Each structure stands twice: as C-alpha cells, then as structure tokens.
Image 1 (cartoon, rainbow, N blue to C red):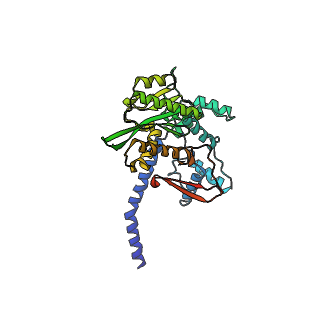
Image 2 (cartoon, helix red, strand yellow; image 1 turned 90 degrees about the horizontal axis):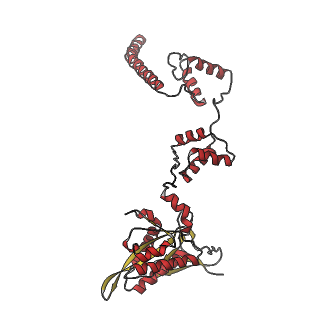
Image 3 (cartoon, one colour; image 1 turned 90 degrees about the vertical axis):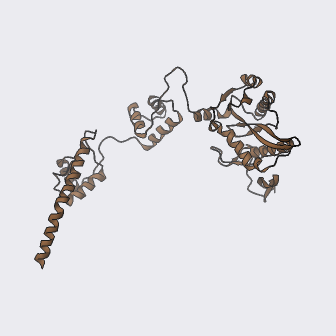
Length: 355
C-alpha cells in the first residue's frame, strides 16, 4: 500500500517538475532581461530588501550562487556573515535631501514659475540652506517640476492666476447682468453694471437702466472709482470681457488715465470668474425668485442684496474662511440669538441682540 502511494507521488512529481523548472527558467530569464536594461551601474538594495533576500535564501540553505542576479554571490555571503555576527546595516551613500527642503523647493517653484533652479539656489542660500544647483535640478526632475526662466528682454508670459494674485489689492472686475421687467409697454430688459474688488471681494453695483449707452456706462465707472476712493481702495487694473458696451469712446477715455483695462479672451467666463460668481449668486439666491414689475422694485432688491453681501454675509472664498467682508464686524458671544428675514425670506441674517 505504501509503495503504491509512493509510486503515485513520484509520478505526480515527475509530471509537475518539468513545468516548475520551466517556470523558474522563465522568471530567471526575465530578471536577466531587466537587469541588462537598468541604466545604473549597480543595484543598491535597501536594508529591508537585504533581510528579505536572506530570508528567502535560508529556505534554500543559502545555496543561491546560480540564482542570485541582483548582487554578486560573494556580496550575499558577506551579508550572511554580517547577519550572523550581529552587525547593524547602515544605508550606503550620502544622506538624501531632507523632506523639509524638498517641500520648500516645491513651494518656491509653484510661487515663482519664472525662476530657474539657479535662482532658487540663491534664495535658499539667503535662508542658510546650502544645496548645489545640480542637486536642485535633479530634484526638480524627480518631482516632475521643470521651472523655465524667461530669457527674453520682456517680462514674458505669466499665468493668469499668478497675475491676479499679484495685483488683487488694486484690481477690479466688472460685468453686466440683466433682469426682465414687465411694464405697461410690455417686457423690457433692465441692465446693471457690477464691480468687484478682487482683494476684499466687496462689490459696487449701479442702478438699473433700460438703455446702457456709452455715457451711462462711463458714469457708472466714475461712481465705482469714487466708491473705491471712499473705501481706501486703489484702482490700477480693470478686468472686463469683450462686450460691445465696453467699446465706447467715453468709456475708453475715462479709463485711459485711471487704470489699465485687461480684456478677457473671447468666450472665456472663467477668466473673469470673480464677478461671474457674484452675479450667479445674486441670481440664484434672489433675482430668479423675483417677478420684476418696475425698475424701482429691482433696484431695491439689488441694493438690499449688495448691502447684505458686503456687510453680514459670510463668504467661503479662498483666504476668507467663512468670514464677513466688513472689516469692522466683530462676532458677539453674548446676547440672545435673533433671525431677521428680508424679501420674504430670500435673505436671512442671524445676529445676537445687544445685551
């Protein structure tokens, strides 16, 4: 009986042995192929990789001379002697660049896209961080960052986001919006012109008109600049789209000596996203729920919303962190909580009643 089981076992093993050997030969051949394609002159295993190779080699009695390809067999034998002698392995080569320096390189590259690696090395030197230009260049390649400084005499092209961030404290964005109003003469379109200061997100909005001609547009721009002066805001840039209502002669002459006009690309609302988002909020939260019957009615609604927006409405924009735009606003921790609703509940304001 036992001899029969042994014979069956031998037959099964002889059946699977060629297939097992072929599998090992395929794996070994693929390792050789990969090893021949490695650019590095040698492979430097980590401490964890050494331990794993020794563990697997122990299963074969450390007879690995014919199957060890990543390192020389004598290197494997040295590892074995060191392990048996209780020697601690120390990582070979010089110490790598600290993670804090790597993170700083990423921040500098993103904040200054026109800087090359040599300029960044100079900035690091000011911070008492000593690192070679070649090391910085290689780190940028590893991290997928490729700073390309502008070599021309001009300032070169910069990203739109960078331009906005660099000039937001003296930059306004403007655009038109409209609301249909039903009058005795039928449906008419009422136009408004809104301005938003990108640095503070505060808004100035005109009164409505059924005829937004060049003279009216210029007058609203003049009112907006006066509002900016009253609030201590300097105006250097004005962003607007290519609407024909911005092409009037008086409009151009007014801004020629006041601020630089920056036109957004054709059909690119995201380039003027600040004012577009504000108009979208006004329409979704208020105007779309109002049936317009007169210009005075819509003027009242828009002015009420602008006052709410500029004084008590929390904002979720970047750098605002759910705070109110009014710089004089101070949260109160005492007093009974009250709620005031306006426009039938379209505008809701929560506050604490003075004690």
